[in-house]
Each structure stands twice: as C-alpha cells, then as structure tokens.
Image (cartoon, rainbow, N blue to C red; front, top):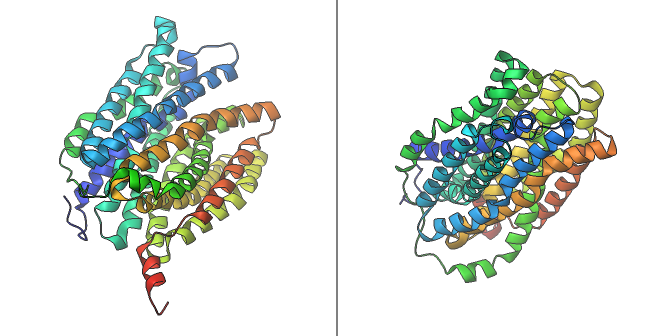
Amino acid sequence: MTERGAAPLKRHVAAVVAGNALEFYDFLTYSFFAIYIGEAFFPAKDPVTSLLASLATFGAGFATRPLGGVLLGILGDRLGRKPAMYLSFTLMGLGMLGVTLTPSYAQIGLAAPVLLITFRLVQGFALGGEVGPTTAFLIEAPPASRRGFYGSLQSASQYLATLVAGAVGTLLAALLPRSDLASWGWRVAFFAGAAIIPFGLMVRRSLPETLDHAAAPPARALREHWSTIVFGLMLMGGATIATYVILSLTTYAQATLHMPAQWSFGATLAIGIGGVSGAPIGGHMSDRKGRKPVMLTSNGLLLASTIPVYFALSQWRSGPMLVFAAFYLTFLLAMNAGVGIMTLCELLPPSVRSGAMSTIYALAIAVFGGSAQFIAVWLTNRLHDPMAPAYYMSAALAVSFIAISALHESAPIRLAKARSPHS
C-alpha cells in the first residue's frame, strides 16, 4: 500500500493514466469513425439512417456501463483498486479485438451488426468499472495538498485518448482516399489500440494497493452521503452531455456543415489538446483556490459561450473556426469535469469510493452519454437548425451549475481555512 502523505511513484501514476487512456481511446474511437462504421455494418440508401444506426450502436456500449460500474466498482472496494483495474483492462482488450476483427455486413450479413453490438456491450461493461478504481487510486496515492492535480489526471487521460485517436484519424484521413477509409482504414485505428493491450496488462500488475481495508461499513457510508450521490448524478449528467456533444463535432462538421474530413479530425486533435491542458490546470487551481470556485467559474463561462461559439461556427463554417471551437469549449469543460470527477470521489468515504463513484459515473454516462450524440443529430434534422446541439448542451450545463452550487467543498486548503479561528 502506498504510504499516506508520500508522493506516488511517477511510474505508478503513469501506469494508471496510460491504461485508463487506452480504454477510453478504443471506446471513443468508435464515435470518430461512426460514419464509416455505419456504412460497413448498417448499409442504407439514406446516409442519415446509416449514421443513426451506427450512433445507436455506439449508445449500446453505454447500456452495460452501470452494471460494470456496480460489479467492478464493488470489487475495487472489497478486494482492492488494483484487481478491479486489471480485470476491466482485460475485458476492454477482448472487446477491442472483437470490434477490430468483426467482418462487415457485406461479408457475413446480419451476424456482423450482432457481433458488433455484443463487443460494444463488453467494452461498456469494462469501462463502467474503470473510472471508480482509477480515480480512487489517483486521490488516495498522493498527499492531500496535491489531490486536485493527481485526481484531475483521470479526466486528462480521457482527453489524452481523444488526442491520440484524433491524431490517428487525421493521419488516416490524410493518407487514405475515402473509399479505403470506409472499407478498412477505420479498423487500423482500432488495431493500434489492441496491439498495446499486452503491455498495459504487464504494467498494471506492478501497481501498489491504496485501499484501506479498515474503512467504515458500506451501508452506513452510503446512507450518510445520499446528497452527494444525487448532486453527483446531476453534475456528471450535465458534463456527460456536454462532453459527447463536443466530441460529436467530428461527425457534426462532416454530416451537418459538410466540411472536409481532414478538418473534422483536426477538431478532434484540438479537443484532445484542450482537455489534456485544461484538466490538470483546473486540478492544480482547485488545490490552491478550492474545488467549487474552479468548477463554478469554468462551468459558468462554458454555459455563456456555447451558443455564441456554435452560432459563429454555423455561419462561417471554416476549418480554423472549427478547431478553435473544439479547443475552447473543451478547455473549459475539462477544467470543470476534471475537478468534478475528483471532487465526487473525494467526498465519498473510502469504503464505498470505488463502487459509488463507478456507479454514479456509469449511470450518468449510460443515460445521457449514450444518447447525447443521437439526440444531437436527431434534433438537428428535426428542427433543421445547426444550432440544435448548442441548445441541448446549454440546458445540460445549467443543470450541472445547479449541482455544483449544492455540493460541499472538499479541498483541504478550503476546509483548513474554514476550521481556522482566524479565517
């Protein structure tokens, strides 16, 4: 077990962050290639119908995330963070290989989409149980004064996955004609992630354990923290919708704004850079200023900016504007979401931290993340308004703002000032 108050070994943190990034890389890569996957597994005369079927399958991967969150999260609370992370990584590897190797509809007919959906369900189960144990590890390993920074690496690792996936997509779009990208090019992106699985399993075996087995009984701990769970669901639900609306900029740029694939994948790179930089900056600031001030400021700025940014993008429809919108919106969201995930985990007691955090996150993702891109596309076509995703995202951010306002402060520096007789 990592010694309390001591800085965690950098290789241990790197192992957790890299493993988490790889799991999210595969899960998110699907959304970036949704158009091509739809053509391969759900051929239709109407491109929108094919895309919606592909996005619905993307959403199917969210259906099993609560189950994975409960089972693997509880495993992390009972046996330890390390075995839970190892099992989730193994299952994700199996799902990753399955998606990579499943033949197209033209080759095996109806069996193709059935297999694709099955492997997406496995991936969803695995990812559902990943967030709780990894976030718990990242806030239990470092000293209290650095929890914000280390905890925010959970979110940063997800954006690192986005950055790598965007780089792979941009490279493939630049090197391959669209026909090759649709027929086999998208599989290369998945295979690149699958090839790293054995290395990731080896690295995770070296992790120390951070679970304190002498923690309080789970039932009592859960009863005493019901408000954190409710407001946590609201916070994660709003942040999840915003996340997947922004991630759908790749599809939005091509399907709605009719922009070249090179620019749309460039936006994915901007999303990755914005998230990788925004999350740790937000985490560091939360160690110095407090969790709530950082979340309220970043969420408020994002809420005020979303509609104007989408309006400018829909009017000019230029590549540079798309890249700027992707970076700016993601930077603010990452500052908010990165601190938010860590704060919820920090507010929960160690005895239920892994299971409760995994369940909160997985439920929010399952209900809102799996449907966000589908709803955004459906609203855009239904209303014939390219601004529809911005309206949807703004409503979600308003809910998050309310939840943040209701949550307790958890930063040690703010709690210390509150207890000080001279404050």
